[in-house]
Length: 324
Image 1 (cartoon, rainbow, N blue to C red):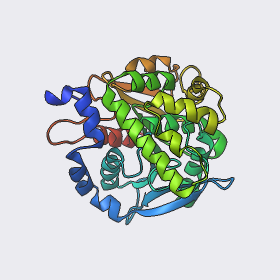
Image 2 (cartoon, rainbow, N blue to C red; image 1 turned 135 degrees about the vertical axis):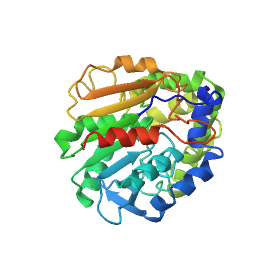
Image 3 (cartoon, helix red, strand yellow; image 1 turned 60 degrees about the vertical axis):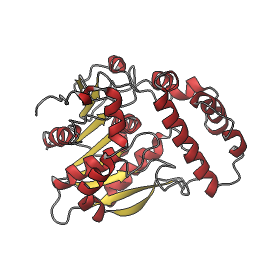
């Protein structure tokens, strides 16, 4: 496949990042994903210890090339444009698709009392195993974007010890060093800070609709920044005393992936304004870890031009096909 080279206007990383999830691409992606969405049904998964996660399952009408489990980014959902776009491409290629919602994402705030946090790995591992047990396939793949890419790589690291079978994992612009990503969101272009702050606030308010005993409603209206929100919610609603300890709790830098046994492929861009490409240098040398870096692409964008097609979709289809 040809290297990613967008048209001139789309070499701007902010246009790339914004087009990935918002704007006029919505209508185009939803039209292209109509077959995927018609085939989908909502599945609630038992993830042990009373925890339930939810997702959308789209089986092939006839034979399937394999099962692809997909995980969205922070504050995304199973219907995020990048998941629908990739899901539509892979569904048309003959794969069965499961678009998994992380806790409290999408329409799943009612399923569990505890609030989502990014260190809740065990329930995602259990969800992936439950999906495979409920919908067995000979070939199994896991794809994640941003925080979903981080989760996917952490699941891959734990797969052999948890009876999870994966032919390959693909992570697009995964969070590697959460402390630096958090700093970028707080200190970088204000559009990203406001976008995530407002989405997180809406998510927390939605949680209160189902669990009104939480006491943070009035406090939430006072927080102006992500940092202020983190400094309240981390010590009060996670097992961590400090924000830095929490962020370190889902880092995959250093030796975290050193013993990786599942073939994993990372695709990131040099101009990502949210997750710095330099973070890739924190990953270990491992024969099962392949890293691909494009010059352009923004954060999970890879939009080719005014046709609003995403280069990442056929690229992932190619990566997956190479493992079968």
